[in-house]
Image 1: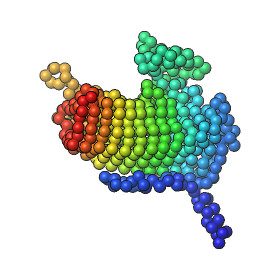
Image 2: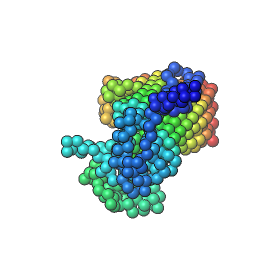
Image 3: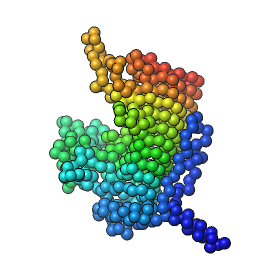
Image 4: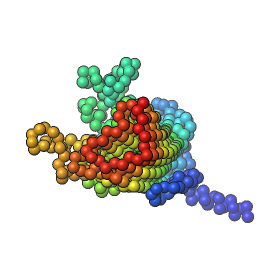
Length: 472
């Protein structure tokens, strides 16, 4: 009997190991129906990066060691790649099917400051934009787990505005070398000490700046426990993926990091975002759905559950947009807190990048010290190229009636929000003559504001009930 049980257990391990957590417990009492996500199943093979020549001394380049380790696991059908304590410098890391990149406590996986390592070549021609340090494309069962840190070394990539740093910080950037333009108002990491440029001007090099982790067209994705920080641009971007879990992750970068989005979910289906901590230079938890025809092709963000997260600095705690032409459908955001964000709940888009929302339910949100608006709808975000001058010659910009991909924020229901210390509680800017904001409700909420309770323009259809606005 004992031999039979041991044989059964061995067979189960050989078949694969899945995360033991029951994610179904998060899906109780939802206002919309959505499938329960499941953790990827990873084969029970384990290798250590040291076994492939990896050295965690903070100096040795480990790109080849990661490539060899992932290749070895791929030949076995997948498994766990363990990165132990140490500082592991690397260039590009491409994850394959059934791979768990597992960072143990005190492991720091750091992008090399040599930008040239992230420029791919094909047929002797360099890509116009750098590739993210960690990527996966058209894969199944992709995991990044553990208690370690993934660091994008963003200071070697990001431009810096003089007005957003202290004198001491500014001196540190100048010590790195770089190039100062606009009469000392802007620093570029161009002509850095010890590192070659990848373009012939600061502006061209800036356009090549890349993200840290991009997972594209993948099935069954888990990112759990790790800290993701200091990206050159956005930090974690699942794009056109199905069955995605982001659980217990810390995402952080300086508050003034240019384009420092934390988590961007783009045209994904069946996503669970829980127990994360975010402190970012741009949007916190952001839903995107593509711009124009490409967004329609890729489809909506659909069946997204966002719960028990904390967002500190960010341009928005929870954000839809700016591009979402593919639409947003069945999104539940509940039991989250935002502390020190620029805005709390932010819905932003503009002509050419808008779409339609439906089944958006947001509840039990707790906000403190919000810089601008607790809830804001912006329908004129980056729509300048579609504006024309009015016929009477007054010079006022108006939007043509046949403008493409007009944003339509509708069927959005917000309740049980408590916000203390915000400049403006609710702000809505629609588009004249267009139904850009309608069937939106705010119920059973309290806002303690310092300047304006409600700032509503261009006749949106928004219903506010059982809600208290208190000036402080």
